[in-house]
Length: 264
Image 1 (cartoon, rainbow, N blue to C red):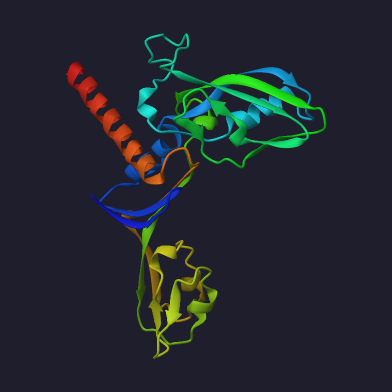
Image 2: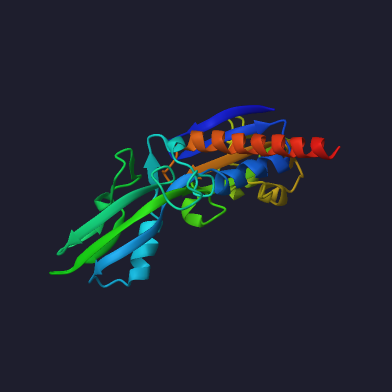
């Protein structure tokens, strides 16, 4: 198995995975979305809310704010904590939010007891407070995975596709395939012959094949090569998200191996 990096940003990573199966590529995708733990606001207590939004709407907006932690490993999930889910500093971090209008309340107004825990983006709108309106909220965030609820889903847009293979045979230089391609995968060289200029952009739509009157183009997926695109919500860096997803797959494989060994 081989990994080749194509693009890397804080919130997005794109890489080529070769020598793997579709099941493994899909496993990475699913693990990024539902098996990598992160922090999210779990429960709140509303002491005062005279805004135009109902309490439930405030709760929903706060729960979907991505959170970052300097060291996420210091927290345990409530189910694995020594307090057995009763609630302690080892499995939850408290916060408070107080605001009075007129003003716009943003995610940056949420203050956590642990200075290492912060919102991933400070400018997320929560609610507009009019003159004399107040919002007083306290609660806590916990560490879980996206399989429990989408608010703990650190991977957002996660997908993969087979690496395409484009072969050009007896080209008649008509250029129809170049014009019909929606992603500018093909171009005409100086001799008006079609060539591939952006292979990774190909979506295997095969419009070029349908347009070619001479059947000079073939587009086929490479069965053991995949282009994976992983985007995060900002709570975890994209590269760390993929690493943690791979570690989770490895952990589960080892666990299955141990279970099978016990049965034999």
